Length: 338
Image 1 (tube, rainbow, N blue to C red):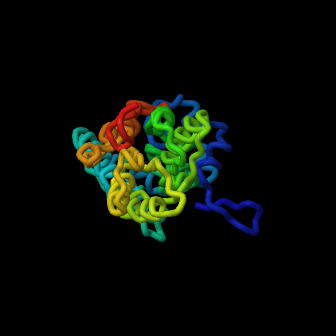
Image 2: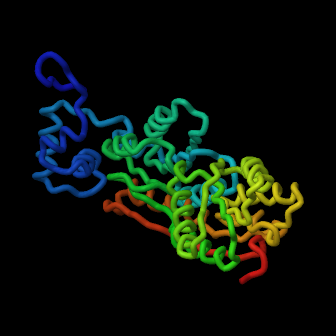
Image 3: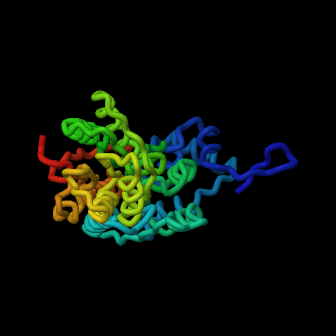
């Protein structure tokens, strides 16, 4: 719907306009229109009067939510390959199915139209989980303003959305402290911190801990998959100034780095220390077993499903921001335990 802004042009009326006109918060407009939580009679009447005067039409996503006609949740991943995403999805799907909801899954990797695809999905579900930086903060704010419950996983919070994550910084500091006891001369972080809020926390925690011991941490950009880990680690370990410790952004990179080290004749745990993150099954059975940080991946997915269902059913109207603990798991890939 459009509104005259001076006689020569017209623009779309948004929920923000209604909130300003009625003198209430955006969330109050959403609750008044969708009945997701109690709103005082006088306030509801003021909101509805503003809606009528401005000619506002709620978004399709918001209308679908109000009618509860999907009985489906949507979850958006940056990628679907790898054990981390698989574990999160298993936890999410199990918890959602227990609540009688089906799950529609979308991966944004390789999509030029990622935001358009997410908008389309939002119109076909009762609520949405967004994992990582799959879409912009502006789109998240637009979806929540339209009344769609949104839960963010492993990314900073956005106004109107729940945020579920893990405490990576604390465990990363412990990992850095553990590495320092082995007295490495050159340590490289294998990963791309700027691509992921989670990876930033891991890099920063290890960096801060090592810095307290006078040890520098440089960065070698790398995608979060095993083949990339093998390629980047081969270049690093085969160079003239090879590091004696690799801190990998996840277990997949670390497992690839172990392959690279063995391929050029290095003994992991003696010639080079390698660490990972997540504690996937392969990390426990690698030889040598991988020192890593255990993330509660299935619990993360289940908690996201629980939080989304609370918002869809209206059993909770306040925002939920929660961080799950992670644990350092010391094994043999750093060498004998110090």
